[in-house]
Length: 294
Image (tube, rainbow, N blue to C red; front, side, top):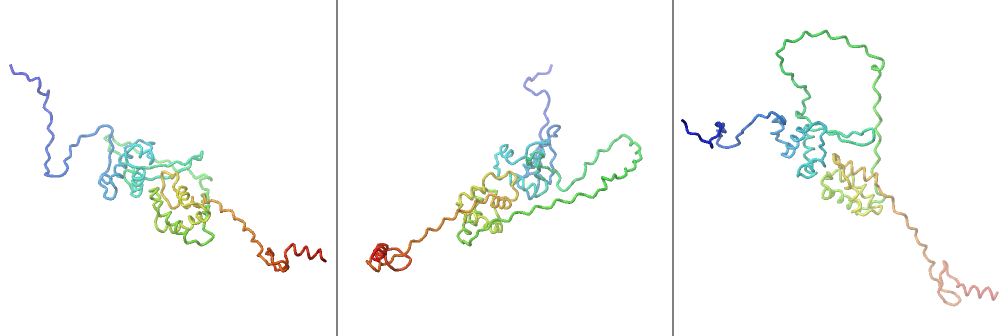
């Protein structure tokens, strides 16, 4: 009778194959059967995307339809800041992995529609799997119906674009206001990183900010107004600042009336006393005495 070993495993386990390469990664792959996502190497090994953008693309591709992928939601889900997540989303948009558009609902609310592409630039339909069953004979294609009068109508003309309101400008040329306005705009990204402006945008917006300073607005007040409550999907910082500088322009300061200057001092020809009058002559008392004597 053979000896029994209670501590021995019920069956031999398959040993993990030892690496054959002297250096580098070795893969131990186990086939997934549930809860998996297929990701192309064009994304996983992309040479221009950052690691954050690649990981964010994989996360978005693994989500079901209708899942939230806003900047605030992602920053609450992951440890990265809103600024870094916004930059990664812009990377994915630039390389065709994401498309974000803003739409206005019938109730007036504006929402962001996000479309994820697992193969940018390819809109081909999936290739059907080969079938072992014999193909059925194709039926003759019915003739296309004749177009109705409504279908032959010409397309409606495109709406006329609404002209943009010009940027405000200061009434007086004050170099000090212009220098302060340009420095304020150039340093906005220190208070709101998403408001990083190009040099030409600073030159374009500086006169509008100088108009605020001319109307008595303090630089701190202008900065708070421009950086307050920025939208999550900010794509064009210069456009947003141009809108705020135009739409929120404060009223001009009220003009202060100039006080009337007093008449100059004159020396009375009768008593040598000083009095105020527009022309030399006699004071009031001397004029009274002269009238009484007459």
